[in-house]
Amino acid sequence: MPQFDDFEIKMLDILQRDGRKPVSELAQEIGLSTTPCARRFEALQEAGIIKGFAAVLSRRAVGLMVEVFIEVRLVSHSDGSPETFIAAVQRMDEVSSCWTMTGEHDFLLHVMVPSVDELNAFVMHRLMRLAGVRDVHTQLVLQNIKGPGHVPLAHLRR
Image 1 (cartoon, rainbow, N blue to C red):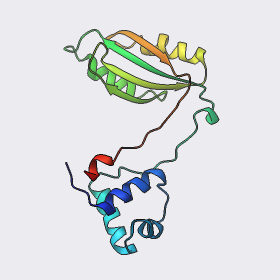
Image 2 (tube, rainbow, N blue to C red):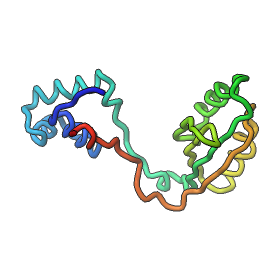
Image 3 (cartoon, helix red, strand yellow):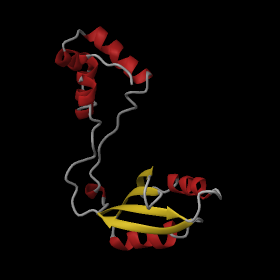
Image 4 (cartoon, rainbow, N blue to C red):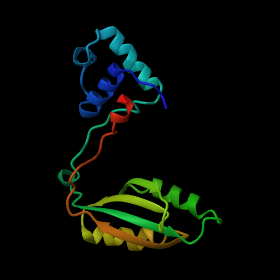
């Protein structure tokens, strides 16, 4: 595991809450001058620890009223089905995230669509028709209590 000092941990924590904070303000908050703060910032980017910056959008404000988690089980893992499935999911705009999983299902997808009718069309006419898909289990999100999440950093302070 990489080692981080207190300045870097504070910097990462602040940037997760406000990625648009100018380096001069960031430096002041963590207790460094601007130049060393900028160097640390650039080093964290070059190391791939800071992967980028993005706007966090409200799904409802852009008309995506239905949010679901979909578990997918494949028929086989030895016939190229996983690779085919992954390639197809990467092309599906409705799928915001996809993970491989242990347990009864092989994949977990986070999906957002405008309506229940669109969810039905997505599941029945696109997802279930992918080669190698055995079954799907859909869980409708009623309310998002917390998230999208931040990366916990407390373990770095130990």
